Image: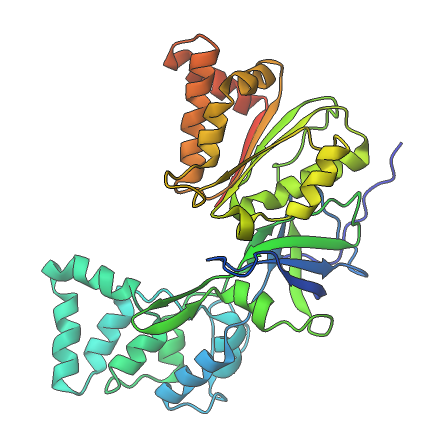
Length: 387
């Protein structure tokens, strides 16, 4: 009989102050992306995880952005603000650093600024954006801006610290698929993170949490509030079952964990991985790990799709179609099928390819293929971790 699992004192409501012990760049010079590997130390937390789980991270906002907001509000930072559901007020600086999201302005702040603007040109511009026929223009305007832009563009509209804080949503933790197995790394969690940096409205923007980890968390010294988010997504308990994993880009994270986990557990089922990104030379994440696993038969097959390495872009779903006969042989033999990564396009394209392959190779009409996929989902043989 297995020992009962000890429940940790740490959770989303009481995150563990973990140390990041490694932060290394996975992409190589010349890549259009900045993808990093982080190691988070769980020693002393009592936290447990399994392959397929996610790590929740509570970030803080950039100090430079907070400083500009305080300056444009004419605030010192010490002004008290009361946040929803809070028992007592806190200083507005603390609220802007760690409690409130500084992006995602809505129509409501435009209405408030229009009511407060004392400069006629500013007032006219704001009222123009609020006109019923300007709905699309307002959406485009807000899409290009964060709260700091609005304070900069309409300086005559004066708001108190509390009035401004009332327009901001709560800063939420970010969830990252765990890229390690507890069988191999019981006191560590590995993450595969694409660092977000871009520009809108002539301002540099960043992913709040991705740059919190990459730029503002010194390795080994600065605690990061984390919690484990348990998931139904995970490798089959049946170690003899074959698995097919489709994980382009950072979608590779849980499948690195799956392969580690199944190798450590002595699984006899085969593992087939589809990985894709832009260029093999710069974006082949964990390349140095896959060949040894292929050599040891811990990974049975690895099919890659590097979209920018030829004139015609090739994606993971194209590799699936190229290997349709073998893929159907695995599926009809009971293999589980997993997808992780971009929900908007990749996951949809992979789903279409899966249905087409089942209909074509299984010799069934499209409606029967739909039923087959539904049955796979019901049996938990088709699982997705998409975002």
